[in-house]
Amino acid sequence: MRRDERKQRLAEMIRRRVAQGVVGAIRRDERGLQRLRELGIVEDAWLDDPEADPLDLLRRLQQRAREIRERPSLLADLGVSSVEVLCCESEAGPPELPATGPDLAVAFTDLEGFTTFTRAEGDGAASRLLGGHYAVVDDLVAGRGGRVVKRLGDGHLLTFSHPRAAVLAGLDLLEAAPEPLRLRVGQHAGRVVVMADDVLGDVVNVAARVVGEAEGGHALVTGEVRDRAGAIPGVVWGEVWPATLKGIDEPVPICEVRRG
Image (spheres, rainbow, N blue to C red):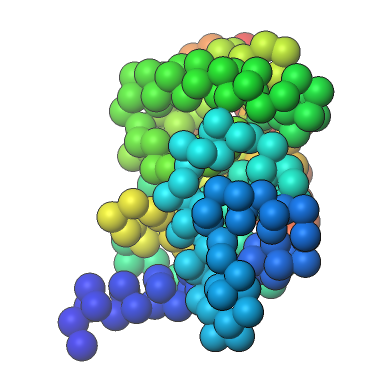
């Protein structure tokens, strides 16, 4: 079997495994399931099929990102976060992928309080907020040479060739967060497996967990990102501490980064 075929099969196996946790939570949520039925994302035949592929639902959610942007309350009803769906994580976490892909800085972002905002202001106001936010993210990430790999609701998965660019883009995004909400950022760096429309691997897993440790208005990066980025004019690194992250066996050194 060719190397590319092996990599593709391994990535597919991992996606299927890590999707099971999110899909399991969705199956147990009748209100969320009803919303999925209304959007035509889920049919009863799929729910009744014991052999149904859990990846199918995650693919449908990501393919229907436009509807979710217009009805952001959907993810809240499902009881999952945008980052969870983007990363397709389960509580067990994915096995580590071999370090055979490109070396990238990976960033996740989401908006603190977005669920509360959506429930208070309604889907219309939340959708308008997301429209402006998406445009700002696209411009700022492109300006730093990065790539918007995918997004869903208020969450973004971003990659950068250089950790320094990732750090600066993260700070740009913090400062451009849509009022009254605050953005949070989590970043890690290392080798990943790149698919046509996705990135996979342990680095992605860690970055998703790091953003979960951040408060709104703050950016957290791993020690790997800090070491690789080095000194950046106008940027201050906080003290590094070992963080115990869900699904990660060993403590991960992380620190805050902010403007000086």
